[in-house]
Image 1 (tube, rainbow, N blue to C red):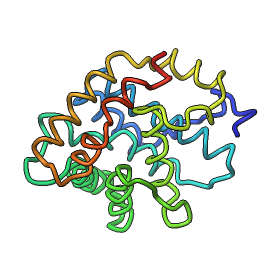
Image 2 (image 1 turned 90 degrees about the vertical axis):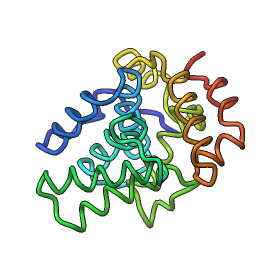
Image 3 (image 1 turned 60 degrees about the vertical axis):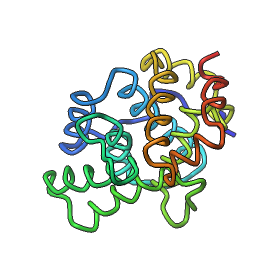
Image 4 (image 1 turned 30 degrees about the vertical axis):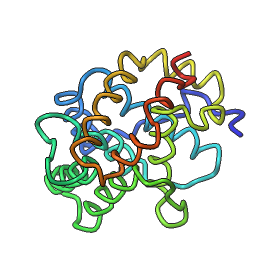
Length: 202
């Protein structure tokens, strides 16, 4: 359980790639989706710090900023799941940032795996953290593992706005168009109800 991590402990990496990813997310995401992406990084960083999980902060931050880019109209794909579309966007972005082919692939993997039911931390710590943190932010799963003070500070700085409504619409639309995707599975599994019951919106 998190007991001592403070908001000021959650350093956001300041690299050209991180600044560029934030610029892309700010340009293409709605305010709600942008704040969700930032919170996803912060929840992940807080959990990792307290749990002793070593992670690549730049890789996790860039992946967090771009993990939902496949939901926006400009990058939406009618042929592949949105997380795969986002992974391709991230690969291209990271190529432009000068990352090695191996590191570009890692960003793609982390984004695709955030939709998995579980990502083993020993296999992919960044994928594990992003899968966990996005679940926290969208459905409220395991939010009790983030201390109240950190939750309060993050939500004050990056409010939830209309994320529940916006994401609910997006995931339902993705599921209807791509029923065999994880989005389709989540819709059939009742994600709308979980979103509505998210304690972060209480």
